[in-house]
Amino acid sequence: MATKMVGHAWLFGDILDVDWEICAVGLIRAAINAGVAYPDLGRFCMAVVDPDFARKVKKGDFIVAGENMGYGHDHDHACLSIKGAGVAAVLCDSTNSNFFRNCVDHGLAVVEYPGIHAATEQGDELEIDLAAGRIRNLTKQEEFEFTPYPSSLLAIIGAGGLYARLKQQISQGTV
Image (cartoon, rainbow, N blue to C red; front, top):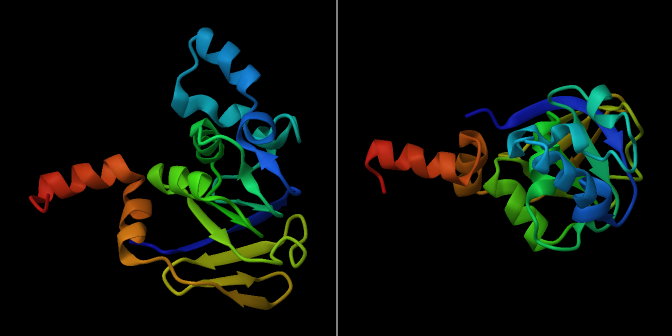
């Protein structure tokens, strides 16, 4: 399983609520009522903060946020929208356990590193190594260390989410 990711940084600020800034619940209610499926929520990712984000972000890029990324309820539509937009991982100064768990459950890595927002500029090329616990800013030639992901979470991320991992384990006869 590949644990390294390379992409460009998309900077957002502090206190990004799952129901308002990350994926506005009003937008997705209308979309789901119109027949949009959950895997297609990527087009609504960060639309309140940057209406063009979903069109500009490239597959494999990163969201880099300040404090309280994923603030609010434990709704998972925000994680689905981030993943659906093609974002490879979220880096932030801080988050909460609900957002972290929901992201991992859907196969999206979240790395908390206090100060990452201030150390990164829009468009910086970053390399994230979840197994080694390393963020490299390739643009600025800087490196930051975080607690590496344990193998159990790497397996979930690598499989594409918790349910995909369980299906793998069932088919392998390990569950």
